[in-house]
Amino acid sequence: MEYDYQFVPVGEQSLNIVFPEVIDAAENRAIQSLARALLDTDEGIIATIPAYHTLTVNFDAFRTSFTELTNKIENVIKNHALLKNDDKKHIIELPVCYDEEFGIDLEAVIKYGKTTFEELVRLHTETPYLIYMMGFMPGFAYMGSVSEKIAMSRLKNPRAKVPAGSVAVAGKQTGMYPIEAPGGWRILGRTPVKLYDPAHPEPRYHAGDHIKFTAISKKDYYYIQKLDLKGSYELKELV
Amino acid sequence: MKTVEVLEGGLASTIQDIGRSGYQAEGFPVSGAIDIMAHRIANMLVGNDDDAATLELCMLGPKLRFACRTFIAVAGGESQPFLDGRPISLNKVYSVKKGSTLSFKPMSAGRYGYLAVAGGGFLTGLVLGSRSTTVRLGLGGFKGRRLQEGDRLPINECYKMASLHFRELTSKKKNRSAKNAEIRFIKGPQWNLFTSEAQTNFCKNFFSISQQADRMGYRLMGSRLSVPKINMLSEGTVLGNVQVTREGLPIVLLTDRQTTGGYPVIATVIAVDLGKLVQLNSQQQIHFKKVSLDEARSELVKQADELEKFRLFLKEYRYHYPIGPARKGAQKLKVLLNEKG
Image (cartoon, rainbow over the protein chains, first blue to last red):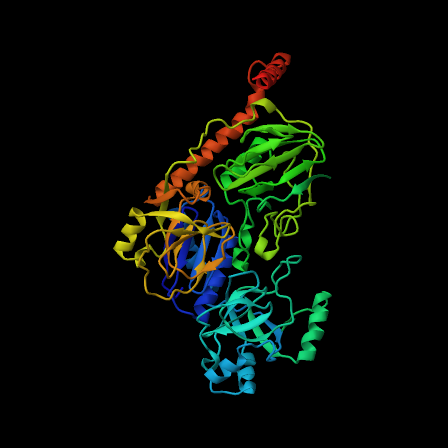
């Protein structure tokens, strides 16, 4: 593996594998791949939590210890051929309505980028975004990287309530709010798709997947929302 | 299946087990009992497995009516339970009849208590492998929320409990009112980013639990620590992590914590001291003490050994000499004596 890393104990039952602190798609893919590989080993690993540049590993302290486990992880890293180039690429299409009713911060971001509405939508929907990690709440995907032009930093004072389904940017990151929550990201639009449902909590996408936004009209927004509520809307997988 | 009816919900009563640990990477908080040891003890007393769901009560417990016979045990904070109007002890198994009511007074010490019922605990549906409630996500437990009047919690009827009158944990008398509490920690992943002055102050100063304390985390009060001036990328959170906010105050991350966080983590409270920490009141002074990873681990093993000893004690007691009618008589005598006393 081409990345430097070090092991840091986080508790008597957890450790971090820390890679260089950058937002880098290739490095993150290696981390995602390692996260899966470690779960497949039988070394007392309970859970792995991949993030931008870290992999948190929770383990059973009665089966293994920090020293023992780090030795084994080192071997996994050495022998795991997929680490460098894990090509399984899922691209999931997510419809977004960039209407000004939903996109509370559209005006501010257009001004920030000295651009037009059409250009902003084009830039935000142009490329698939890698999900670097899931966090904050179920269904919240931290994705990147958006074009510099619309990469407006988050609000100084977060809003008390961001509506469920809001699609937003924060610097070069982009993501969706699955449920109503406080938040400071700049809101560009809203997806009609329910991203978190306590009755069916299984996530519809995972870290390592890609999301490609596609712009829809307000009419389509309500149509898809209706279908989705009935459970008859499937997210389209592009690859 | 039989039920327990909720007559009054109490302050924040929820169904909890040992949490859904496999889904943190998907953004699901682990959740589960905030005082996991108390949850385990309550379950063990009534002969359940660790992962059976208990009712977690907070400060003021609920009022319940049982629609069938079973056996119960209450553990954790001093919740002052009353069975059919008579006070009962914590950490001890009681038989309840059809129609029996269980109520609580406001806790005299501690914050969280656990009610376990025999026969496998509360049998609400499994969600992602766990019955734990995460209230802010409306997930798991009973309808994803705190218990309310009129709820009917599914349980199994249970008629038998081996060596009932010996099922009591007496060894541990906790001093819950001590003015100072020592909480041990190991260095957190960002310990080295803090100045040596901040490190020293974290260990030297006293902290107390603020009003902002819930199942997500306890915000502490005390003198402010100087915070490293860095912008961290978010990383996975671990139970007991002590984050330091921009204002320089520590937050101890607990069972409903956000799955990722971007504040520097100065310390992680060792697992065996978390139960003590979560039960402290806001007047008690917390003193953090640094220990090595090895010590944290051996404390964990020690605690597990004690618990295992207690489990074996409960299991083997009924085979102690003398076995047979005489022994049955002894149990009855004990009950009679208790009732008279």
